[in-house]
Length: 49
Image 1 (tube, rainbow, N blue to C red):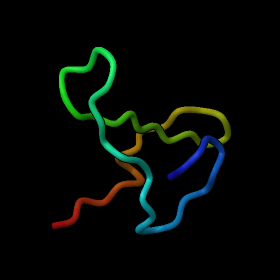
Image 2: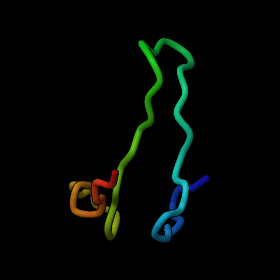
Image 3: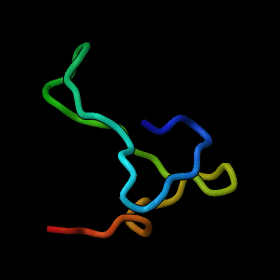
């Protein structure tokens, strides 16, 4: 799994889904940062089937 500050490679597993605490269902928090600034992650994610 990825830790803060790590660079990821294509196809690498980033996280696991779960439902803990006060959540309403399985979910994952995902954020992309470049040079310490949050950016739109859609630029880095490609939909696949």
